[in-house]
Length: 109
Image (tube, rainbow, N blue to C red; front, side, top):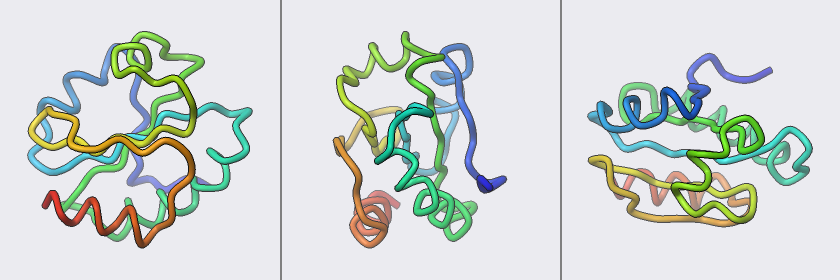
């Protein structure tokens, strides 16, 4: 079961949620049919639960929200973006480990 601390964003809500964030944001571009996406989902849930108030974890389904995926140049999934102050600071394509993600996220805090 997904964490209640992971926000599900759409093309309509993405920009406002990211722009208004006072904390770093970890964005997961994913799809329901993507095996590696399902594999890292529990890791992202854990990060969201552990970093409440310090960072945000958000998910964008690329099949349902192609405009946002296209705007950020997502060509493969999972693609993870680390955003701070509305700017993409890092992009990770493919599954990544929890330790690596936490390290990169904490560096932005």
